[in-house]
Image (cartoon, rainbow, N blue to C red; front, side, top):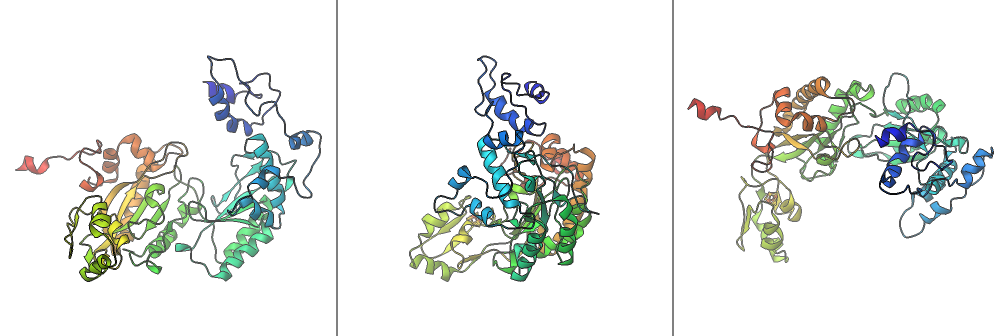
Length: 461
Ligand code: SF4
């Protein structure tokens, strides 16, 4: 109720004496801070920034436009101290066509002074034929910093495994210096190349040049986000399937869903070729494909003995750290009870010459992870315990279609698939997509109350 009340106010509602008038875009950003300080049992306390206007804002009220020349960045300059790389130094060195770097620093300094963001949320901008790939961003102090009044971000589909030639990187940089701020983020959390900051009139030209150079925009909004993967078989000996090929095939298969948002909300697909999960799929992707093996860990006993001779305490450092305690070292030979192994990779990472994944390779498919935005963070749950490597693409296409049909039918606006599963229950979701529950969906007995096993065979007997 307090939030609704605050949303309706033109002026600061918590501190009525405050003269400061917040723009409609700025008010929601202030709500949390004001709400936290709001306590009906105590006299109202003046929020730290209330009533204080920064010098730059006061200048703007008087019509002073300080966009030429270097902005004063006393607070930001502090971030250049110390031994670490500084994004402030990098922004100072940028020189794109839009000349936005200095105004960007000026606005950021103002945000540090005011303790609020001066970016308005979202806005609809894009390029012809695509519904995604461009994230609209506008400044709410655009009169003071006209070169970042529009500061749209482009997401560019990265190559699988993030392998570039230096020529490709130069091409992207040249296009972005011609049309944008010159600032990039390599890479965003989805995996795309992020081109930070351009104006609306540069969008089409940037898009045309990127596509002619062989690049494409990635996903944004309620679309399939650009699928991403680890380097897989290109560099890693533990890869249990070709993650780069699968990622490429999925990207090509879902071009329409990637470029034209048609889902209840974003849908991220990440492929990690072994359980080390170097793309952190299990914590971030709506659909995770994580390499694993079905048979026994391969053991080279001679190499194991070499590790012991070199001083590795195999019993203490390897066997005792196995999460299921399924390993044993008798001083000469290593043995593994593979039925109890949960494919955590600890022992293989620790003794790579002595241990290798089995030969029957494939992947486990998991569902439902997300970072906190509307609701809290979720980790993935197992959906299919094992799919052979050569059946992955067909299985995933069939499965994804069933998941989307269910999500389309029962998902609410901006509800991630993991949140929908939490709301309706895993049993209803599995029923809806036509999958039978499997023991691997439950990490410990009675851990998941949503799965029921019907004693059908006992009844028949
Ligand atoms: Fe144990 Fe993990 Fe090695 Fe399996 S992979 S044997 S669970 S340490």
